[in-house]
Amino acid sequence: MSTSVAAPIGQSPEPVAVVGTGPAGEAAARGLIARGVPVTLFDEQPRSGGNISRVLASGPPTSLEALARHSGLLALRCGTRVLSVEPGGRVWFDAGQGAEAAEFAAVVLACGAYDLHDPVPGLPAPGVTSAGALQALLKGQGIVPEGDIVIAGSGPFLAVVAAGLVRAGARVAQVLDRLQTRDYLRLAPWGLGIPGNSLEFLQTRALLARAGVRMRHGVGVSEVSAGELLTDQDERIAFDHLGLSERFIPQTQLARTAGCALHYDSMGGYWAVTADDLGRSSVPGVYVIGEGQGIRGWRHAGLSGKRVVPAVMSDLDGRSPRRSPGRWQRAFLIGFARALEKAQARRARQASRADAVICACEGTRVAAVDEAVALGLADLSSIKVVTRCGMGPCQGRYCEPQVTERIRAAGHTPRGALNQRAFSRPVSVAEVLDDAD
Ligand SMILES: Cc1cc2nc3c(=O)[nH]c(=O)nc-3n(C[C@H](O)[C@H](O)[C@H](O)COP(=O)(O)OP(=O)(O)OC[C@H]3O[C@@H](n4cnc5c(N)ncnc54)[C@H](O)[C@@H]3O)c2cc1C
Image (tube, rainbow, N blue to C red; front, side, top):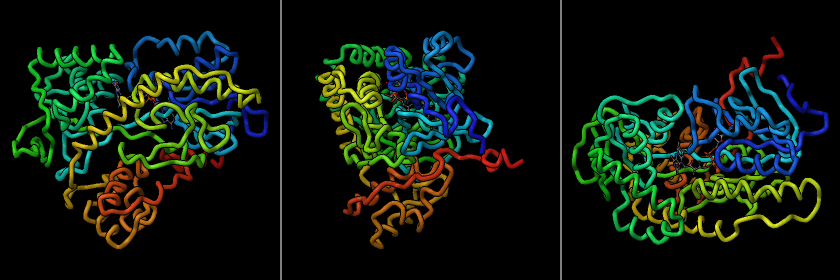
């Protein structure tokens, strides 16, 4: 393996690595360099911005990219997948030329989230992706799908995706949101605390109404076939593209490679990294900010990036930390996010059909997982061995939350998340053996 980069193994470590250029990682990197601390900022995407501020691959430089050109303190490494983080600060990454490593005194993980849909009978099917994938293709590549689009699942993200597609000239026929109108009314008092949020919500709805998009509440998808879905109200709807999104799941794979403690969040239905309110994980020198702490939205992500800065600095130089900003704002944003998660949990599908595929990589069905749970297995690693859930290329990112839900539905307490000891991204043999050629 090649080990050549800024701070080769065996030499004194670079100060700080930040993984992720979303609002969390960007705020942390900016805060650290403003205090004179050099930062190496990684992102596997070709451009900086994370999920919410994703830009066209061919677009002009972002302000962060412009800053990196002029600041001697910021090394921005987009197009670089971070493969694993070792306790002690060794970071393995791949910029397309094989696995490389460097040592850092502190590693800040700001890896964000991904969107997930339920195991629906008939999936995988042509024309069906996650809603997030439709948005990412539009924002990052300028791809506007042709034909009738239906966006379905749960939560305000559906309308955001639909509005983005409409603005780009796509034909969105319907948005099916499992949340009911009264769920949004219950969330309204929280929204009033963030005026920008409420305004965006209303503008999005107005745009969809003007474009003739049917926005329906309290409707879910119960079955999919090629070009058609069946709602839970027995209505058939034709589509050319269907984007599904039920909820977000924190990206915790790198934190797992470092050995950070996780906890199961039953309201959100995911494993999140256990961190203190400044972002310190259970592993000294490894910090987790943004969605890795639990799904809290982009405002919280940016705030968590600011709050981690004093913690990293005081841990690096041994001085007691200065006050971190936004304690009350943080509590409010978490309260809002929890209220949304509660509404989503209340309206979630009550039962998964046995014939639905739960692990798309391995084609495992819900029935196979339920049989394993009925045998008394309540830990994901054992269920993985018996059903192959989690053995495919995504390494359980998509099926782990669903399998955990099956364990809970059977009345058991999940014993632990999947282990992630090796690289968090698929790596070809050629990349690993490049020095052996
Ligand atoms: C597909 C998608 C679209 C979304 N769109 C919206 C939206 O339009 N509006 C909204 O309010 N919220 C949106 N969200 C929610 C939103 O992601 C968060 O609220 C916010 O972006 C979180 O910020 P973050 O900094 O924690 O992570 P993110 O913005 O997700 O940034 C994380 C970054 O880490 C990088 N990364 C992760 N793992 C690695 C690795 N191993 N190596 C290198 N880089 C890595 C990713 O490439 C990504 O750029 C979206 C979420 C998703 C998943």
